Image 1 (cartoon, rainbow, N blue to C red):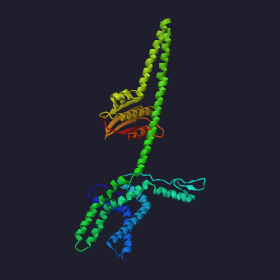
Image 2 (cartoon, rainbow, N blue to C red):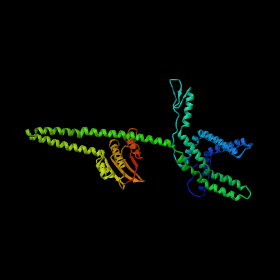
Image 3 (tube, rainbow, N blue to C red):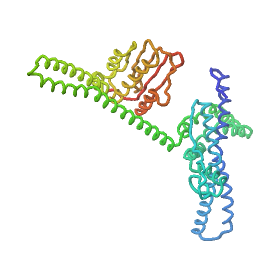
Length: 441
Protein backbone atom coordinates (compact mmCIF):
# COMPACT_ATOMS: atom_id res chain seq x y z
CA UNK A 1 0.00 0.00 0.00
CA UNK A 2 1.28 3.45 -0.91
CA UNK A 3 0.84 6.46 1.34
CA UNK A 4 -1.03 9.17 -0.58
CA UNK A 5 0.44 12.63 -0.83
CA UNK A 6 -1.31 15.89 -0.14
CA UNK A 7 -3.11 17.28 2.87
CA UNK A 8 -6.50 17.44 4.48
CA UNK A 9 -8.67 14.95 6.32
CA UNK A 10 -8.70 12.46 3.45
CA UNK A 11 -4.91 12.39 3.42
CA UNK A 12 -4.73 11.74 7.17
CA UNK A 13 -7.38 9.03 6.95
CA UNK A 14 -5.37 7.34 4.21
CA UNK A 15 -2.23 7.53 6.31
CA UNK A 16 -4.05 5.99 9.26
CA UNK A 17 -5.33 3.11 7.13
CA UNK A 18 -1.90 2.50 5.59
CA UNK A 19 -0.26 2.78 9.01
CA UNK A 20 -2.62 0.21 10.50
CA UNK A 21 -2.00 -2.15 7.60
CA UNK A 22 1.77 -1.86 7.95
CA UNK A 23 1.57 -2.27 11.72
CA UNK A 24 -0.37 -5.50 11.26
CA UNK A 25 2.19 -6.81 8.74
CA UNK A 26 5.13 -5.90 10.98
CA UNK A 27 3.50 -7.42 14.02
CA UNK A 28 2.87 -10.65 12.12
CA UNK A 29 6.50 -10.79 10.95
CA UNK A 30 8.03 -10.13 14.35
CA UNK A 31 5.69 -12.07 16.65
CA UNK A 32 7.02 -15.53 15.78
CA UNK A 33 9.99 -15.66 18.16
CA UNK A 34 8.20 -14.05 21.15
CA UNK A 35 5.15 -16.26 20.60
CA UNK A 36 7.23 -19.46 20.53
CA UNK A 37 9.25 -18.36 23.56
CA UNK A 38 6.19 -17.43 25.61
CA UNK A 39 4.25 -20.56 24.60
CA UNK A 40 7.10 -22.96 25.41
CA UNK A 41 7.96 -21.09 28.61
CA UNK A 42 4.36 -21.06 29.80
CA UNK A 43 3.70 -24.70 28.93
CA UNK A 44 7.05 -25.78 30.34
CA UNK A 45 6.42 -23.93 33.59
CA UNK A 46 3.07 -25.65 34.06
CA UNK A 47 4.59 -29.03 33.23
CA UNK A 48 7.65 -28.74 35.51
CA UNK A 49 5.61 -27.26 38.35
CA UNK A 50 3.53 -30.43 38.37
CA UNK A 51 6.67 -32.36 39.37
CA UNK A 52 6.86 -30.64 42.75
CA UNK A 53 3.18 -30.03 43.56
CA UNK A 54 3.18 -32.67 46.27
CA UNK A 55 6.72 -32.02 47.45
CA UNK A 56 7.10 -31.38 51.18
CA UNK A 57 10.62 -30.42 52.20
CA UNK A 58 12.69 -27.70 53.79
CA UNK A 59 13.00 -24.37 52.01
CA UNK A 60 16.59 -25.00 50.74
CA UNK A 61 15.39 -28.16 49.01
CA UNK A 62 12.35 -26.36 47.58
CA UNK A 63 14.62 -23.55 46.32
CA UNK A 64 16.90 -26.06 44.59
CA UNK A 65 13.89 -27.76 43.01
CA UNK A 66 12.53 -24.40 41.79
CA UNK A 67 15.95 -23.55 40.37
CA UNK A 68 16.11 -26.89 38.56
CA UNK A 69 12.64 -26.39 37.12
CA UNK A 70 13.56 -22.89 35.96
CA UNK A 71 16.75 -24.11 34.29
CA UNK A 72 14.80 -26.89 32.60
CA UNK A 73 12.25 -24.41 31.24
CA UNK A 74 15.06 -22.13 30.03
CA UNK A 75 16.66 -25.10 28.26
CA UNK A 76 13.40 -25.94 26.50
CA UNK A 77 12.82 -22.32 25.51
CA UNK A 78 16.37 -22.05 24.13
CA UNK A 79 16.01 -25.25 22.12
CA UNK A 80 12.63 -24.15 20.75
CA UNK A 81 13.96 -20.71 19.78
CA UNK A 82 17.03 -22.26 18.13
CA UNK A 83 14.93 -24.62 16.02
CA UNK A 84 12.54 -21.79 15.15
CA UNK A 85 15.50 -19.63 14.18
CA UNK A 86 16.92 -22.26 11.82
CA UNK A 87 13.53 -22.83 10.20
CA UNK A 88 12.11 -19.29 9.97
CA UNK A 89 14.76 -16.57 10.43
CA UNK A 90 15.87 -16.48 6.81
CA UNK A 91 12.34 -16.26 5.40
CA UNK A 92 11.21 -13.67 7.98
CA UNK A 93 14.27 -11.51 7.44
CA UNK A 94 13.93 -11.64 3.66
CA UNK A 95 10.34 -10.49 4.01
CA UNK A 96 11.45 -7.64 6.30
CA UNK A 97 14.05 -6.56 3.70
CA UNK A 98 11.37 -6.49 1.00
CA UNK A 99 9.16 -4.34 3.20
CA UNK A 100 12.05 -1.97 3.96
CA UNK A 101 12.68 -1.56 0.23
CA UNK A 102 9.00 -1.14 -0.67
CA UNK A 103 8.05 1.20 2.18
CA UNK A 104 11.27 3.09 2.85
CA UNK A 105 13.32 2.72 -0.32
CA UNK A 106 16.08 0.85 1.55
CA UNK A 107 17.66 -1.69 -0.79
CA UNK A 108 19.55 -4.17 1.40
CA UNK A 109 21.44 -7.02 -0.26
CA UNK A 110 23.10 -9.86 1.63
CA UNK A 111 24.91 -13.08 0.77
CA UNK A 112 24.18 -16.46 2.32
CA UNK A 113 26.67 -19.29 2.52
CA UNK A 114 26.08 -22.03 -0.04
CA UNK A 115 26.55 -25.75 0.51
CA UNK A 116 30.01 -27.17 -0.12
CA UNK A 117 30.27 -29.46 -3.17
CA UNK A 118 30.56 -33.12 -2.24
CA UNK A 119 33.43 -35.22 -3.57
CA UNK A 120 33.72 -38.98 -3.98
CA UNK A 121 37.02 -40.16 -2.52
CA UNK A 122 39.16 -43.08 -3.67
CA UNK A 123 37.97 -45.04 -0.61
CA UNK A 124 34.38 -44.85 -1.86
CA UNK A 125 33.24 -42.42 0.83
CA UNK A 126 31.83 -38.96 0.10
CA UNK A 127 33.45 -35.83 1.56
CA UNK A 128 31.21 -32.83 2.29
CA UNK A 129 33.93 -30.41 3.41
CA UNK A 130 33.65 -31.42 7.08
CA UNK A 131 33.32 -35.20 7.30
CA UNK A 132 32.96 -38.44 5.32
CA UNK A 133 29.67 -40.20 4.46
CA UNK A 134 28.76 -43.52 2.95
CA UNK A 135 26.31 -42.14 0.36
CA UNK A 136 26.18 -39.08 -1.88
CA UNK A 137 22.65 -38.29 -0.71
CA UNK A 138 23.71 -38.20 2.93
CA UNK A 139 26.77 -36.10 2.07
CA UNK A 140 24.65 -33.52 0.21
CA UNK A 141 22.11 -33.39 3.03
CA UNK A 142 24.80 -32.84 5.63
CA UNK A 143 26.53 -30.24 3.41
CA UNK A 144 23.32 -28.21 3.29
CA UNK A 145 22.86 -28.60 7.04
CA UNK A 146 26.45 -27.52 7.72
CA UNK A 147 26.12 -24.52 5.42
CA UNK A 148 23.03 -23.42 7.31
CA UNK A 149 24.36 -24.04 10.80
CA UNK A 150 27.71 -22.32 10.06
CA UNK A 151 26.29 -19.39 8.09
CA UNK A 152 27.11 -16.05 9.83
CA UNK A 153 24.41 -14.30 7.80
CA UNK A 154 21.72 -16.71 8.97
CA UNK A 155 22.73 -16.22 12.61
CA UNK A 156 22.72 -12.43 12.06
CA UNK A 157 19.17 -12.85 10.72
CA UNK A 158 18.34 -14.71 13.93
CA UNK A 159 19.61 -11.75 15.93
CA UNK A 160 17.25 -9.53 13.93
CA UNK A 161 14.25 -11.73 14.76
CA UNK A 162 15.09 -11.54 18.47
CA UNK A 163 15.69 -7.78 18.48
CA UNK A 164 12.61 -7.13 16.36
CA UNK A 165 10.54 -9.22 18.75
CA UNK A 166 11.39 -6.93 21.68
CA UNK A 167 11.49 -3.60 19.79
CA UNK A 168 9.56 -3.55 16.50
CA UNK A 169 6.75 -5.78 17.75
CA UNK A 170 5.75 -3.69 20.83
CA UNK A 171 5.87 -0.41 18.92
CA UNK A 172 4.06 -1.74 15.82
CA UNK A 173 1.42 -3.36 18.04
CA UNK A 174 0.61 -0.13 19.93
CA UNK A 175 -2.02 1.14 17.45
CA UNK A 176 -3.60 -2.31 17.30
CA UNK A 177 -3.66 -2.65 21.08
CA UNK A 178 -5.14 0.83 21.31
CA UNK A 179 -7.98 -0.09 18.97
CA UNK A 180 -8.67 -3.49 20.52
CA UNK A 181 -8.37 -2.27 24.10
CA UNK A 182 -10.41 0.84 23.34
CA UNK A 183 -13.15 -1.23 21.73
CA UNK A 184 -13.29 -3.43 24.83
CA UNK A 185 -13.46 -0.46 27.20
CA UNK A 186 -16.19 1.27 25.22
CA UNK A 187 -18.57 -1.63 25.87
CA UNK A 188 -17.59 -1.79 29.53
CA UNK A 189 -19.95 0.25 31.73
CA UNK A 190 -18.31 3.36 33.12
CA UNK A 191 -15.18 3.09 30.97
CA UNK A 192 -16.48 4.38 27.62
CA UNK A 193 -14.49 7.61 27.82
CA UNK A 194 -11.24 5.74 28.40
CA UNK A 195 -12.07 3.47 25.51
CA UNK A 196 -12.63 6.39 23.12
CA UNK A 197 -9.34 7.95 24.27
CA UNK A 198 -7.46 4.70 23.60
CA UNK A 199 -9.00 4.38 20.15
CA UNK A 200 -8.05 7.96 19.28
CA UNK A 201 -4.49 7.37 20.58
CA UNK A 202 -4.20 4.21 18.50
CA UNK A 203 -5.37 6.00 15.35
CA UNK A 204 -2.97 8.90 15.95
CA UNK A 205 -0.04 6.50 16.45
CA UNK A 206 -0.85 4.38 13.38
CA UNK A 207 0.96 6.52 10.74
CA UNK A 208 4.16 6.59 12.82
CA UNK A 209 4.49 3.30 14.72
CA UNK A 210 5.60 1.21 11.73
CA UNK A 211 8.47 3.62 10.98
CA UNK A 212 10.58 2.03 13.71
CA UNK A 213 11.47 -0.44 10.96
CA UNK A 214 13.73 2.19 9.32
CA UNK A 215 16.59 2.65 11.82
CA UNK A 216 16.58 -1.00 12.91
CA UNK A 217 16.59 -2.22 9.30
CA UNK A 218 19.67 -0.15 8.53
CA UNK A 219 21.46 -1.56 11.57
CA UNK A 220 20.40 -5.22 11.63
CA UNK A 221 19.01 -6.26 8.21
CA UNK A 222 22.29 -5.85 6.32
CA UNK A 223 25.22 -8.19 5.95
CA UNK A 224 26.67 -9.91 8.97
CA UNK A 225 29.76 -8.12 10.33
CA UNK A 226 31.96 -11.11 9.44
CA UNK A 227 30.76 -10.94 5.83
CA UNK A 228 31.32 -7.18 5.69
CA UNK A 229 34.84 -7.69 7.05
CA UNK A 230 35.46 -10.46 4.55
CA UNK A 231 34.35 -8.30 1.63
CA UNK A 232 36.57 -5.45 2.84
CA UNK A 233 39.53 -7.84 3.09
CA UNK A 234 38.87 -9.02 -0.48
CA UNK A 235 38.70 -5.40 -1.67
CA UNK A 236 41.97 -4.55 0.06
CA UNK A 237 43.66 -7.65 -1.34
CA UNK A 238 42.53 -6.70 -4.85
CA UNK A 239 43.76 -3.14 -4.31
CA UNK A 240 47.10 -4.41 -3.03
CA UNK A 241 47.49 -6.69 -6.02
CA UNK A 242 46.60 -3.89 -8.42
CA UNK A 243 48.98 -1.45 -6.75
CA UNK A 244 51.74 -4.06 -6.82
CA UNK A 245 51.21 -4.60 -10.54
CA UNK A 246 51.09 -0.86 -11.14
CA UNK A 247 54.28 -0.31 -9.17
CA UNK A 248 56.02 -3.13 -11.04
CA UNK A 249 54.93 -1.72 -14.41
CA UNK A 250 56.06 1.76 -13.39
CA UNK A 251 59.48 0.47 -12.31
CA UNK A 252 59.82 -1.39 -15.62
CA UNK A 253 58.90 1.79 -17.51
CA UNK A 254 61.47 3.84 -15.57
CA UNK A 255 64.15 1.19 -16.12
CA UNK A 256 63.36 0.95 -19.85
CA UNK A 257 63.37 4.73 -20.31
CA UNK A 258 66.66 5.06 -18.45
CA UNK A 259 68.25 2.18 -20.38
CA UNK A 260 67.03 3.22 -23.81
CA UNK A 261 67.26 6.96 -23.28
CA UNK A 262 69.48 8.72 -20.78
CA UNK A 263 71.79 5.76 -20.16
CA UNK A 264 72.43 5.19 -23.87
CA UNK A 265 73.13 8.89 -24.38
CA UNK A 266 75.50 8.99 -21.42
CA UNK A 267 77.41 5.96 -22.76
CA UNK A 268 77.60 7.63 -26.17
CA UNK A 269 78.83 10.83 -24.53
CA UNK A 270 81.62 8.92 -22.77
CA UNK A 271 82.72 7.32 -26.02
CA UNK A 272 82.62 10.68 -27.82
CA UNK A 273 84.66 12.38 -25.15
CA UNK A 274 87.19 9.54 -25.28
CA UNK A 275 87.49 9.99 -29.05
CA UNK A 276 87.83 13.75 -28.60
CA UNK A 277 90.58 13.13 -26.06
CA UNK A 278 92.58 11.20 -28.67
CA UNK A 279 91.95 13.79 -31.40
CA UNK A 280 92.47 16.98 -29.42
CA UNK A 281 96.16 17.18 -30.35
CA UNK A 282 96.12 15.63 -33.81
CA UNK A 283 92.87 17.14 -35.15
CA UNK A 284 91.45 19.91 -32.89
CA UNK A 285 88.65 20.76 -35.33
CA UNK A 286 87.31 17.20 -35.31
CA UNK A 287 87.61 17.10 -31.52
CA UNK A 288 85.52 20.27 -31.26
CA UNK A 289 82.81 18.75 -33.47
CA UNK A 290 82.72 15.62 -31.32
CA UNK A 291 82.50 17.72 -28.14
CA UNK A 292 79.65 19.78 -29.64
CA UNK A 293 77.74 16.54 -30.39
CA UNK A 294 78.43 15.37 -26.82
CA UNK A 295 77.07 18.63 -25.48
CA UNK A 296 73.90 18.19 -27.55
CA UNK A 297 73.58 14.62 -26.30
CA UNK A 298 73.94 15.82 -22.70
CA UNK A 299 71.15 18.35 -23.23
CA UNK A 300 68.92 15.64 -24.73
CA UNK A 301 69.73 13.27 -21.84
CA UNK A 302 68.90 16.00 -19.34
CA UNK A 303 65.58 16.68 -21.10
CA UNK A 304 64.72 12.97 -21.00
CA UNK A 305 65.57 12.76 -17.30
CA UNK A 306 63.39 15.78 -16.58
CA UNK A 307 60.53 14.24 -18.57
CA UNK A 308 60.94 10.99 -16.65
CA UNK A 309 60.90 12.84 -13.31
CA UNK A 310 57.78 14.75 -14.33
CA UNK A 311 56.07 11.40 -15.02
CA UNK A 312 56.99 10.14 -11.54
CA UNK A 313 56.31 13.29 -9.54
CA UNK A 314 55.46 16.38 -11.61
CA UNK A 315 57.25 19.41 -10.12
CA UNK A 316 54.25 21.63 -10.77
CA UNK A 317 52.12 19.26 -8.67
CA UNK A 318 54.56 19.42 -5.76
CA UNK A 319 55.12 23.16 -5.99
CA UNK A 320 51.73 24.59 -7.01
CA UNK A 321 49.17 21.90 -6.24
CA UNK A 322 46.50 19.90 -8.03
CA UNK A 323 44.60 22.68 -9.77
CA UNK A 324 47.63 24.29 -11.44
CA UNK A 325 49.06 20.86 -12.27
CA UNK A 326 45.86 19.86 -14.08
CA UNK A 327 45.85 23.20 -15.93
CA UNK A 328 49.45 22.64 -16.99
CA UNK A 329 48.57 19.13 -18.15
CA UNK A 330 45.62 20.50 -20.13
CA UNK A 331 47.97 22.75 -22.14
CA UNK A 332 49.79 19.69 -23.48
CA UNK A 333 46.65 17.67 -24.25
CA UNK A 334 46.00 16.82 -27.94
CA UNK A 335 42.39 18.09 -27.63
CA UNK A 336 41.02 21.35 -26.30
CA UNK A 337 40.66 21.08 -22.52
CA UNK A 338 38.90 23.59 -20.26
CA UNK A 339 39.68 23.42 -16.54
CA UNK A 340 37.47 24.96 -13.84
CA UNK A 341 37.96 24.67 -10.09
CA UNK A 342 36.19 25.57 -6.86
CA UNK A 343 38.73 23.81 -4.61
CA UNK A 344 39.68 26.42 -1.96
CA UNK A 345 43.04 24.90 -0.93
CA UNK A 346 45.29 21.91 -1.41
CA UNK A 347 44.21 18.39 -0.40
CA UNK A 348 46.44 15.81 1.22
CA UNK A 349 49.47 14.92 -0.90
CA UNK A 350 48.62 11.21 -1.53
CA UNK A 351 45.05 12.13 -2.52
CA UNK A 352 46.33 14.99 -4.67
CA UNK A 353 48.68 12.70 -6.57
CA UNK A 354 46.03 9.97 -6.99
CA UNK A 355 43.47 12.41 -8.42
CA UNK A 356 46.09 14.04 -10.68
CA UNK A 357 47.15 10.75 -12.26
CA UNK A 358 43.50 9.65 -12.53
CA UNK A 359 42.70 12.83 -14.49
CA UNK A 360 45.82 12.27 -16.62
CA UNK A 361 44.67 8.74 -17.48
CA UNK A 362 41.14 9.93 -18.23
CA UNK A 363 42.47 12.58 -20.61
CA UNK A 364 44.69 9.97 -22.26
CA UNK A 365 41.65 7.72 -22.73
CA UNK A 366 39.74 10.61 -24.30
CA UNK A 367 42.59 11.23 -26.75
CA UNK A 368 42.84 7.53 -27.67
CA UNK A 369 39.23 6.34 -27.80
CA UNK A 370 36.62 9.09 -27.54
CA UNK A 371 37.17 10.97 -30.85
CA UNK A 372 36.24 14.11 -28.93
CA UNK A 373 36.72 17.72 -30.00
CA UNK A 374 36.60 19.32 -26.55
CA UNK A 375 36.96 18.24 -22.94
CA UNK A 376 36.12 19.94 -19.66
CA UNK A 377 37.67 19.14 -16.28
CA UNK A 378 35.80 20.32 -13.18
CA UNK A 379 37.53 20.19 -9.80
CA UNK A 380 35.32 20.70 -6.74
CA UNK A 381 35.28 20.14 -3.00
CA UNK A 382 32.10 19.70 -0.95
CA UNK A 383 31.02 17.62 2.05
CA UNK A 384 34.68 16.73 2.74
CA UNK A 385 34.96 15.09 -0.69
CA UNK A 386 37.27 16.09 -3.55
CA UNK A 387 35.79 15.44 -7.00
CA UNK A 388 37.29 15.64 -10.46
CA UNK A 389 34.83 15.36 -13.36
CA UNK A 390 36.06 14.86 -16.92
CA UNK A 391 33.41 15.45 -19.61
CA UNK A 392 33.97 15.00 -23.35
CA UNK A 393 31.79 15.30 -26.46
CA UNK A 394 33.02 12.03 -27.94
CA UNK A 395 31.29 8.85 -29.06
CA UNK A 396 30.50 7.51 -25.57
CA UNK A 397 30.22 3.87 -24.59
CA UNK A 398 32.95 3.98 -21.94
CA UNK A 399 32.78 1.28 -19.24
CA UNK A 400 34.98 -0.01 -16.43
CA UNK A 401 35.49 -3.44 -18.00
CA UNK A 402 37.85 -5.90 -16.34
CA UNK A 403 41.42 -5.06 -17.26
CA UNK A 404 40.58 -1.62 -18.66
CA UNK A 405 42.13 1.65 -17.58
CA UNK A 406 38.86 2.77 -16.00
CA UNK A 407 38.77 -0.38 -13.87
CA UNK A 408 42.32 0.34 -12.73
CA UNK A 409 41.36 3.89 -11.76
CA UNK A 410 38.35 2.56 -9.85
CA UNK A 411 40.49 0.12 -7.86
CA UNK A 412 43.08 2.78 -7.06
CA UNK A 413 40.36 5.15 -5.86
CA UNK A 414 38.98 2.40 -3.63
CA UNK A 415 42.31 2.45 -1.78
CA UNK A 416 41.31 5.94 -0.57
CA UNK A 417 37.65 4.93 0.05
CA UNK A 418 36.84 6.82 -3.13
CA UNK A 419 34.67 5.93 -6.08
CA UNK A 420 34.48 6.24 -9.86
CA UNK A 421 31.14 7.17 -11.47
CA UNK A 422 30.74 6.70 -15.24
CA UNK A 423 27.91 8.15 -17.33
CA UNK A 424 28.64 7.31 -20.98
CA UNK A 425 25.62 6.50 -23.15
CA UNK A 426 26.31 5.40 -26.75
CA UNK A 427 26.80 8.49 -28.85
CA UNK A 428 28.03 10.49 -25.89
CA UNK A 429 28.67 12.66 -24.10
CA UNK A 430 30.85 10.87 -21.55
CA UNK A 431 31.05 12.11 -17.96
CA UNK A 432 33.46 10.40 -15.56
CA UNK A 433 33.71 11.55 -11.95
CA UNK A 434 36.44 10.63 -9.49
CA UNK A 435 35.43 11.31 -5.86
CA UNK A 436 37.75 10.89 -2.88
CA UNK A 437 36.95 11.83 0.75
CA UNK A 438 39.72 13.97 2.21
CA UNK A 439 40.55 17.05 4.26
CA UNK A 440 42.06 20.23 2.82
CA UNK A 441 45.12 21.95 4.21
